Length: 129
Image 1 (cartoon, rainbow, N blue to C red):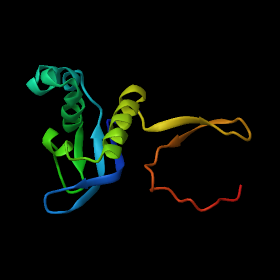
Image 2 (cartoon, one colour):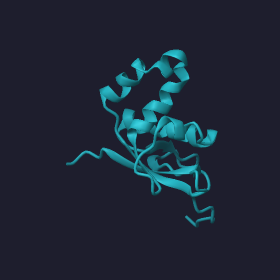
Image 3 (tube, helix red, strand yellow):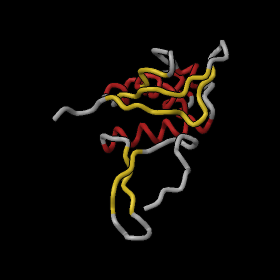
């Protein structure tokens, strides 16, 4: 069985580049120990620990739309909702190895997993069960 090391995602809002292009679909890879250690030596992180997440995400996001790489300066311009989404996505794939959530049905109390979907990306059409 092969382990998945890259995970697709869709940003709730999306990144708007300098030319006005919207980028929402991306890929994040699992982080390495070095990905988490290296930014700690960065002067921006030493001056402001909140900057750590921007450097970390710029290392593990391998694609966003037509962009093949991101840098922390670009991430500074992300909408807050997208940054929160990416932080949560990073935690899920690196702690659990997947992007699914364990849930319990409120009606039958059955436990199952669902693949996470950003806001606005689901079909809200009522389903007959």
